[in-house]
Amino acid sequence: MVLRGSERGFRIVELDAPYSPRVGRSKVTGTLRGTMRAIHDMSALLRDAPSRAAAPRPAATSAVTR
Image (tube, rainbow, N blue to C red; front, side, top):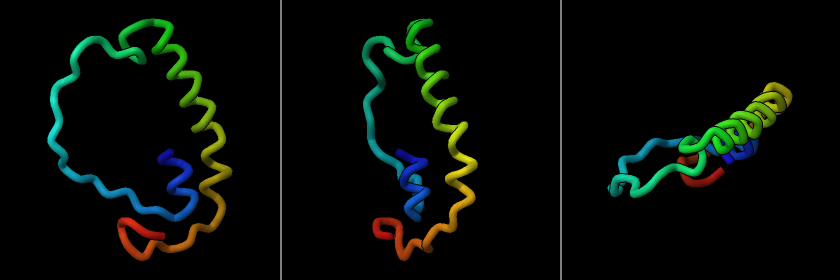
């Protein structure tokens, strides 16, 4: 989602948000299988990222619009 937003010219803004601590165990990093799947999926996305980054991006007009 972040890569696609960047590709389309969206800006990423970090905002503080109230939240509650996680209850239970993470499905992604709580198991070896979940960790391996996350590594595989992110590696595939990042492998394609340089070709995406080379394309010119339109300037964002604000934090919430393109």
